[in-house]
Amino acid sequence: ALHSDNNVGWLVAKAALHDLGQFASERGIPLVGMIFPIISDMDLPKAIDDVLSKVASAMQESGFTQVVELAPVFKAQARGATLGEFMLSRFDGHPSRGGHELVGRCLATVLPESMGDAACLKTAGKAPQP
Image (cartoon, rainbow, N blue to C red; front, side, top):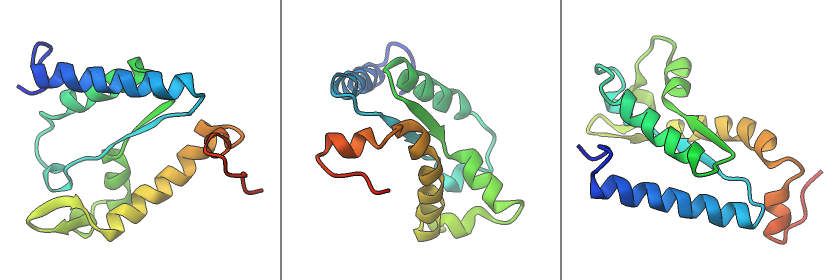
């Protein structure tokens, strides 16, 4: 399996997360990780939950300021209705425009608490907006 502890792909992915975390930490940049679900598979049995938890743990261990798993966000918004409105098409489980809008609203609530006084904008040389 891709995320087994000894899988070369997983080891490379973990090393990349570590490098990204170190890069951000050295520059004082808050790092928010967002784990996107495959929306078309969200109604299936949760065999992938362990994988998502493993990815979230690797992000946290790598120094990410915050890790947001988006599956609960999509489920809460659907409130028993179909998740299809958040999918690109019935053949493609990637987020649609509506799905990306939902993620944007979630990100807008997460960023202020992760960024403090807009340190990311200051680092990029842009003045924070009041």
